[in-house]
Figure 1 (cartoon, helix red, strand yellow):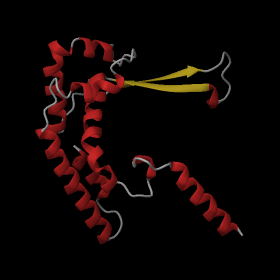
Figure 2: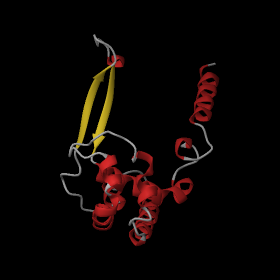
Figure 3: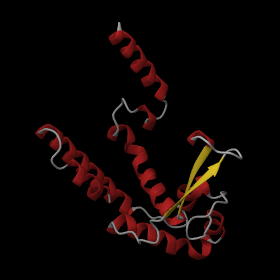
Length: 175
């Protein structure tokens, strides 16, 4: 899945060294995809993939909420797991699953500025489960795939550390 998303962006960019690094990264992601393909996403994996939003009451464009999926997991869990595995293994997603509703909620009665509006997006539960499965597969590798400068993705690192470094660098360069 990631191979097809990354490769078009990587072609024709940078030097030969950049191309080699992109190719190495793509091979790593493809190998990771093979690991994900062999994992069973049945009832045993359901709580880890679904646990973060199982008690949420939001509904996606399909009108289904995570509570519905969680409550009837024993009936439809295998079918949903097969759908997620099909997306991961075959790189094909049903166009109906790929819809997202974006809602602008005003924070006050008279919204005059963009800061007076809260943006909320609702995606399909199956799409959310697929992205959660990919994220779970990436967790063990994340520190080797992401630069140490991108601390947001690395556990026990704060983005504020980078902000302070940039602030000090900017101060030094301006004086």
